[in-house]
Each structure stands twice: as structure tokens, then as C-alpha cells.
Length: 182
Image 1 (tube, rainbow, N blue to C red):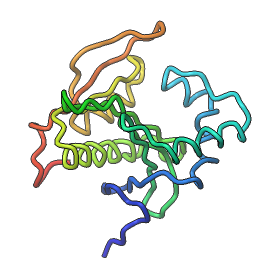
Image 2 (spheres, rainbow, N blue to C red):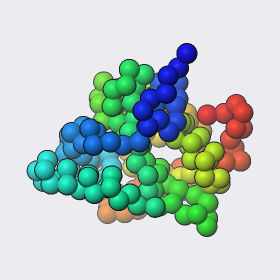
Image 3 (cartoon, rainbow, N blue to C red):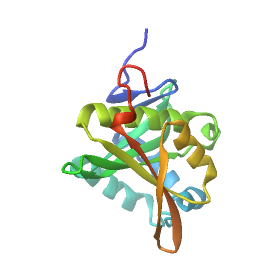
Image 4 (cartoon, one colour):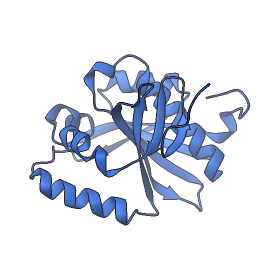
């Protein structure tokens, strides 16, 4: 029998997506400060002190944006291994962009990212009625592209930002058989 994790939003075969909590801040700070992880997001690592990060983190928890939702990714044992989010929420177009980070390197290339993406997409489509979920990943990040393809995403274009080229991928709700897929 599977027990429900505190704040659980969605569940995959390997992961649980749950609401963020203050106790996630140390992991999130470590991951956001990591130069290699920042490179995967075409971002700069967070360079301020932990207390500055914690102040921002508390504000985000207390005053969440209606245009984005951040979730924690846990493994089957309840360890916080990464984060998933959906943002650029457009209720009129019925779509949102997603992002995912598996911060704990021991979980890379083991299916956790794909499983988290599947659980996130299933959750978004079932609870919002959105017709499209999309993402952008750096054109050189073949590992991420493979994970997204395994989750059912298809390449639909390219974009450029800040001197970087991104592969744009999408998942359409019409592709989801709610009884069987994802």
C-alpha cells in the first residue's frame, strides 16, 4: 500500500512531487549556487549569502505567484532530490512552460527526471485542463532532450536568448490517454 507524502501533488513510479516547504531551502540554495547546474539553465549561479536566499525563499512561499508553481521532487524514500515547476501560465491559451532540476547528481541518468516530468505533465493537464505544456532546453543538452522525449515531448522549434540556442519541445493534452498514459 502506498502512503501519501505530506503535501503530495503528484506521484510517478520513482518520484513524488510535493509542495515546497521551508526545509527545502538548504538544498535549493546549494543547487542554485552550483555553477554546473546553473549552466544547464543558461543562468548564473546564485552568488549571495544563504540568509539573502532564505529571505527570498520565505517570500516566495508566503506570496506565491499565480503565474508559476514550484514543487519539490522526492525519491521513494522521501529524500529531496530536485525541483519541478510550471510557469508562464497562460489560462487563455491554456498552456504553461515547465522546468525541472535533479539537483542530486546520484540520481542523474537513472530515470528520475523522466518520471518527474511525466508526473508533472499528467498533473498539469488533469488539474488545469491546459491543452499544451512546453519547455525549452539548451541545444547541447542531449541528456535532457532524451528524457523529455521519453516523457512524450516532441520538438516543435528553436529559440535564442542571451546568446544561447534552445530546443523548444511540447506535449499536447490530446496526446494523453488519461486512463493509460503518463
